Image (cartoon, rainbow, N blue to C red; front, side):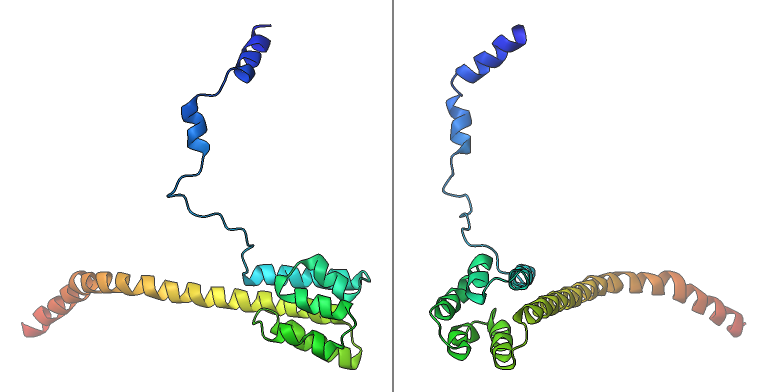
Length: 175
């Protein structure tokens, strides 16, 4: 019974003004981002989702709208209105994030191949390129970290390891 009364008192009692003030945004708080981050893995996920929608049988404009890629909204509108693929995918060619998909879509429209397979391959290629870039950056960081360490430890190695051996050998040969 005591627990119930305590819980009721906490729910009914007004919150301290100081606690409420802490929750309000301050002028020095970073701005909230409304747009989704547009990294390579997000683009690859969108391409995978597009491929899945197309494999499920959705028409291309509906699949593009379902994925929600802002750069392709104009293309989806043009395709839904019945524009030919060359014209419809032209706006996407100007965007670096969608140019490869636009080229693949134009190619598949001419040949009659499935766009879903092309989108899945493009997603895998995007992921592989991102992994390669991340690995290259990690290797550059390793070199950048190792160089100062080498500059610190090399003189110590020479003074404590090489110089005593050379002096010892020189002492034996000079006798």
